[in-house]
Image (cartoon, rainbow, N blue to C red; front, side, top):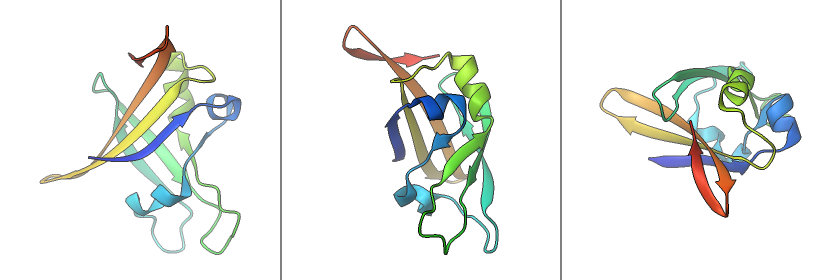
Length: 115
């Protein structure tokens, strides 16, 4: 299992879109000529979320990948706040690639899973 993202959430992340790290783009197959791809991620209670990863374009030096799609619904359902943490993993298995997502919140200096 490979960690694609570990991030403390910002206001923009919880109100608009999730900024995605450019170095992790390798983990998604964005068809040539396209600027977005949908991927399903499963959370800790096995609920599936359809996230849309988009970029401005390969030749744009200011490409800042973002995740939208079900992202804001995920934020609302989990009650996420600024400072909470998000993790995204990629796992390759016999049935193909699987993505997992998890949110955590710090309570008394201990990070706990947000269901």
